[in-house]
Amino acid sequence: MKYLVTGATGSFAGYAIKELCELVGASQIVGTVRSLDKAHKLKELGIELRQADYFDLESLIEAFKGIDRVLFISSGSLERRTEQHKNVVTALKKSGVEFVAYTSFPNAEQSKSSLASDHRQTEHFISDAKLDHAFLRNNWYLENETSTILGAANQQPIYYSSAEGLAGWALKEDYAKAAARVLAQIKGQKAVYEFGGPLITYGDLAGLINQVVSKPVAVNAVTDEGLREHLKTTPIPEAAIDFVIAGQDFIKEGDLAVSSEDLSAVLGRPVTPLTKGIEALLEGK
Ligand SMILES: NC(=O)c1ccc[n+]([C@@H]2O[C@H](COP(=O)([O-])OP(=O)(O)OC[C@H]3O[C@@H](n4cnc5c(N)ncnc54)[C@H](OP(=O)(O)O)[C@@H]3O)[C@@H](O)[C@H]2O)c1
Image (cartoon, rainbow, N blue to C red; front, top):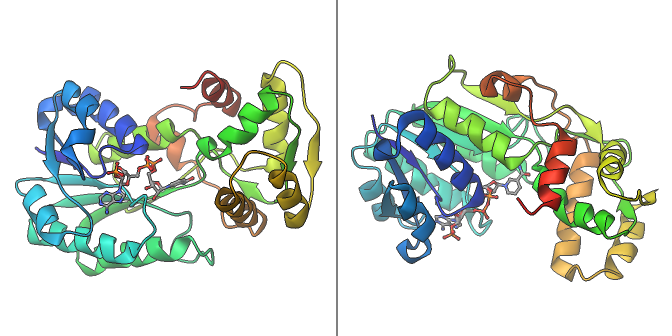
């Protein structure tokens, strides 16, 4: 059995490949990368590497030859992302891959979030191609809050504008390990997984951050404009400010309020507690 992970130089893929190595052994794993020059660490793991770009259909068809099961990680580039993803699905079909697990967005089929539409379309490409599949609808990475966590450790107050909106933060490593376990068929398979941690508000998350940092900081619930004014006083670049506010809006609008036990069920253990995750991010893990 040959397993392939796309976007292997990405950080989600890195965790997934490590877990897959434990589960099935490096000799059965292939990773696709855009640039083989950037893949030194992966070479050390002993997996096979193949070059492929989501914009280049022929490179994908070639890379998927002889592969049975694929972990398709959504592109980190939003530029014409549905075109990139359509190419991946076309290549999966043409190469005769038997199963694909795709990293998607919470409640992708019904979600009104602007971030969901690429993922919904990709799920449709996969279903329409009649590929055996699992949609791994990942909730929010705790890593998205790294700057807030590091700031709090440096005595900077926490600001948020997501009001009482709920999200299911979990460590990227937990999502990636679950993805590897689905790919390796460790548990009975479902077609759709809603992966995430317990639903909490940003205020709750701030409380957990304050439990971990040496001296608690003030927590301020503000409007989007209040958050923007605050972020302008920090070193965060203007483009990143828009991204932070968009993230807060997704939470406020309920886009991430999807409750599910799927993540712990597939991991076969509780999701890593957020306080442990916050500690890990403070240690730079
Ligand atoms: N749920 C969440 O909170 C959340 C947050 C952020 C992102 N995401 C999604 O989760 C995915 C994985 O996250 P991550 O942290 O691992 O992201 P990451 O470290 O930025 O990795 C993104 C990967 O996408 C690859 N990529 C970009 N354009 C490509 C193309 N044209 N062809 C092939 N590969 C391409 C990159 O390749 P190179 O190394 O060659 O650049 C990289 O390997 C992201 O791509 C994004 O879709 C989810």
